[in-house]
Length: 325
Image 1 (tube, one colour):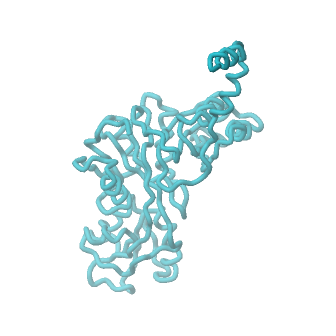
Image 2 (cartoon, helix red, strand yellow):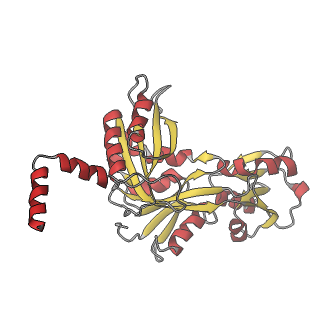
């Protein structure tokens, strides 16, 4: 991995969030230096902005959840360089899938019938909504900036109960009212490690590549762009659209491809997309933690065939044959 050793890593805090858990796993895997300074911030956008400003060398942010889908704050922040080039580019260099289940934490001595308010992050709410409806019917939901902040709010007496990682409850001296809560068992959140525009990851053969782009306003613009992938057999693993905030009907597309920018098929597909799009920003190529999709096809045979058609190639082949005799 061609990135300078990180000394500061920004992440969605406070302590006890799933983002901090993912970051600790990056540290344990040797992908973040063990002596790095871990700095909690209040949003994924703030973590990425710290990298853009040079205040941190890396950011750890949630990208998508298997239940609730993309984390819109992260997507919008990654696309910022498209509209503000002076903000600086970012590169995703690693990913990690973290299993997600919650404890319902309360202050010591709180009974279920004492709960009048319930707090968690909106993404987490999508994963405990059925439990809340069945076990705490009618209790109003209060949105928190993170699951760690939700636990802190309970400890401060601002709300009665929170859905948070078990560790967050332990950090704040709370008790579990319920454990292992998840409306969908086996849910995961994919977290990514993001560096500046000079950061990169080497090709492994099991990689992802991410881009964001906008399209001209004409019929079949998206179909035409996607055809650049189809004709090269490049697998698209995800595509999302987000409003550009410049007016109704204007969108920026986030796309992930299977493969690395060093794969010829992926590089050619990106070149084709560059011709088809209005704006295109490369967000990095990095190893998949759990391989999915079909790797791009090799071009060595077809390249060799074309070289064989070039002027002089037939004569060179005959000369080589005579030398062998």
